[in-house]
Amino acid sequence: MVDSPRTGDGEYRVIGLDPGSRCTGYGLVAERSGVASLLEAGTIRPNADDALSDRLGTIFAGLIEIIARHAPQEAAVEDVFVSRNSSSALKLGQARGAVLVACSHTGLPTHTYEPSVIKKNLVGQGRANKDQVAFMVERILGVSGAKWSRDCSDALAAAVSHLNARRLSSRVRPYTG
Image 1 (spheres, rainbow, N blue to C red):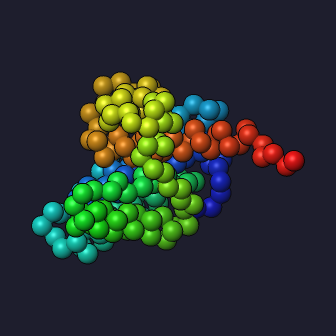
Image 2 (cartoon, rainbow, N blue to C red):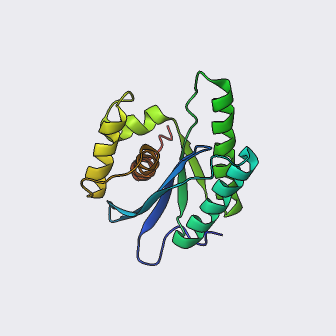
């Protein structure tokens, strides 16, 4: 379980997740005094020859271990991209379900974002390509020349985008009329 909204040193941790049945990207980002930094990034890659149920179990177990190790305060999950292939879309949705259940199982508050919202938040336009998003993630996290997979880069983008949205919402007061 996640105990407190902040770590003792004023650091706020978010895990970004890019679900996939063959490869799930994750990225952990910490923010302290408005500055984001990379904690860890990688992928969970179940055995492609395993049954789908076993691959989903691998994703679930892998995320439980990562969440326990880093104790993020929130999760940011990229929404499912609708594919032309209905079978692929169903598998992707099931992988997303495994990710959401792992977050729920650990008590981690979870926020979901459309890919276009993440892109707009980081690059300024919702149709940005993956290279532009990866470039901005590297700049924001102060990491140059990273050799992340696309899944990992997308997960980090979700985490950074969530931190931006969180910071903005904390500064904007709702109109009470």
